[in-house]
Length: 500
Ligand code: 4AD
Ligand code: MG
Image (tube, rainbow, N blue to C red; front, side):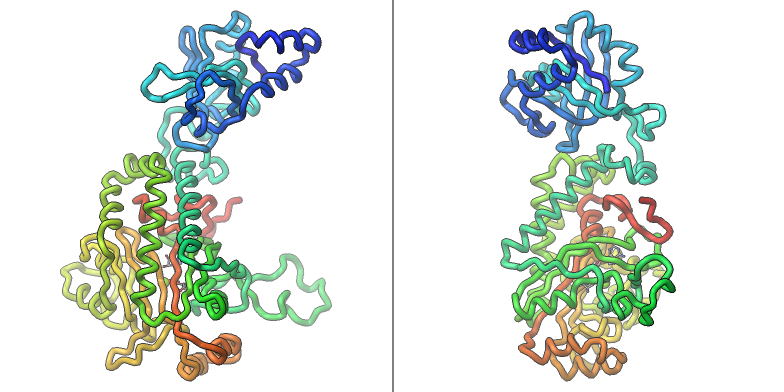
């Protein structure tokens, strides 16, 4: 650790130093006289002339003839704070700062603890700058070995190789601030609309989606050590949750409107740009709901309220993506906010696909599931405004989807929200609340015993209800105009990749 005193300290402190000249004591006094601030607060501060202390990481070092300029960032904003170690320095300090010091310690990426005075900046690029009195290098960073280089704009693919370090890059730190703010906005949306948050379990014994993409949960190690004849830790097979929906349905039977927002797991053997093995899902469940229109209103309002919040609270961070990585995407976002989302039925969607001149890889026959290529085409067809597709073939949907009892095309009251470039963002449905019909469907699937508790919800005070889930990472892709889901989650997990 290297400590530098860059300016003569006030008389009071100097006299103390005479009595105790230890560097630890000097450091202590200097810190005591300074107010600790984040870079973001310092940049917005109007209190020029005040003593402040900043802790962060060096983003650039520019030695000039009389001045040393540093940019320091602490994760609180995209913009760094300019630090100037200026011409007022005494010779001893200049000697310490220049070449021997720069090449060894004060480098791009090192961690610093700086005290000094906030001053109005002569430059137009920032309002204030920090005139340093002390710079302490808390943690060195060898610029040769550090995978990110000063002034280079590294691609998202490149920084993806360093999941433990990529939060130090501008783009990924912006992403994480946006992610945090979007998460707050989602929580506020539900709280403001009277929903109760439920912490649904991560470990569960049911397979909500029935798609078989489950991770099983058992203790690690040799099971033969135990005398217990039951092979399962929980006595039954248990899995990481693929959706909190069924647990939310339990709670909607008492609280009317509930939501959950947490990690969700799918063992999809996919390296696709839209799928992760661990992702975050926002799910809502609403009792006394008889129409898909009510659900769609909530989805559209959630999307718009969250996006407006992010645009106004993270303007600089969002601009970084819209300016450098997805030029023109801001117009797309504004269009999505301004226009009412479209609604088409699955049958209409199939008609649109069939009558198009595009050659699709996957089938467009009625009864086939919509694939990403179909979803993207449909959104384009609807003017790049998000589109709800409703009333899917009954056979395509899980047991819980409400039977529309229609003929000859038998459908369920299910809905997907498709958005530009991403495709499916939300999936939801009205739930089958009629005991008789649900019981028959579960019996056909051989699941009646497993879901006895679920049937009981229909026996005791059953009400029409419905809900949906929105993939949080896909939401971030959609508003930022990014293409790879691995770039919008702090630590991406997908098949054959779980590095830390
Ligand atoms: O459409 P899904 O499978 O719906 C459900 O799980 C319902 N039980 C939700 C409900 O009604 N409460 O998943 C919902 C959303 C998808 O639309 C998609 O955005 C996202 O979750 N999603 C994934 N995101 C990333 N990686 C994956 N492997 C995903 N699988 C689904
Ligand atoms: Mg779905």
